[in-house]
Length: 596
Ligand code: KIV
Ligand code: ZN
Image (cartoon, rainbow, N blue to C red; front, side):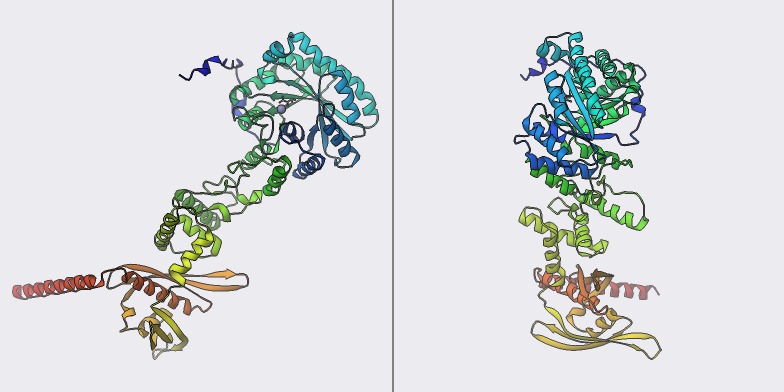
């Protein structure tokens, strides 16, 4: 039996009355702080070197992140050097604040002050662990002992700040009761209040209280209850900016952050693509783009997500998953035929309605908003429907196939995907289209053609077609007049085998190709012998010629099909049916005559 679950202690929800967070919505972006270069970096198999950290830092600045935790300079020589390089190398724009992390321990705090000398804007982030479990297992201390660690650190920091501030540094403070999510909320509020007092925070000079989900241990709504309770219980709430620092152990980091924002948080610490300890920190890209797709300006720029992803993969040596929201290789790809149909309809609806809003099913975001393209949205495999094929033809190649033609060409593509047993590319689809409609081997082809517009004896404009038709090795000159090129052509071939077709449907449009444009015509004919229907397609820069090419394409397809049929049997059956019909008609006529 699988009974390991019995050793886990269930989370005890924080009792709260009259919670208000479920009624709220997110209407503005929080203050973003990136912890990629600290929490993210410390979780890498191969931590970033100086060059990589600098490149990463500059990308974060370009994205628009204004607070960046650059490391743990008192704990690592590399972090110390990077901190110095950022400051001395002039890498930090005036509107960006660097943040440095330090444990609430005297010698580390002193070293941190050395590391930040000369910086313009700094957040000094100190922390100690406060949870019930850590107090018991790691520190063996009671609440007062843990509080003293925090307040001693606050006193020292406050004292050491004086000279840095006098030197012109804009120095702010951040305190994290690490493992906040496992701390009794009354105690969390108590220790944070003590820190507020020892660091002399005021409503004008607020401290950032960062409340980490160091290890995610409950449902996001339970976390929101805790947070709302904490904010209500903290006596000097107005002296603090409430910050979140969610990890993702239960896979709910994004939801925890979003509900935490509803419950009173104003700031979020996150990483690109969710890198960080274990299952990672919460993903800044998903959070920001979730806001974006709700009509809220996230104040971060992910308009070139591929470039950011490339930088991330290069510097961290970690891959971004193919299904990663907003950034994964496959997130703008629909495999299912019904999804493809709906996307296709959505694209048409957007065009025809001129809607200023994004209203395309299955695509929660316009791929162009993250620098991706519509083109890779649809890929064709054996699960794709006819709509997907039509979408590819239109969006990759400009062929807007008549709706009635979708099943026919869809079946051609389906046969091919079944044959190859894998997905096929848009170019493969175009090849099939050419082979099926545009480039048949015969038996018919048009060797020469000319059209003339003229007035007939009744003064109406008509078209005269003169041409040479090849049929296998035979050549025939033909001529006909009609009220358009199609009519003229059919009149020219009257009496030929190829005239035994009924014209059923027609569509034409232009395909522009840079400054040039060609006409494409789709024509549906019915073979009068087999009663089968065939679409044909013709393209030409001559608007009269494209329809004729389409007719020949359709007829050639019919002849190719006839070659696979037992034509003798079909003709015999047809003749028998005609004879029977004739006999029945004659009998009816005789009957009628008798009655008269
Ligand atoms: O996850 C965590 O608790 C941390 C703290 C140091 C803020 O990274
Ligand atoms: Zn963390």
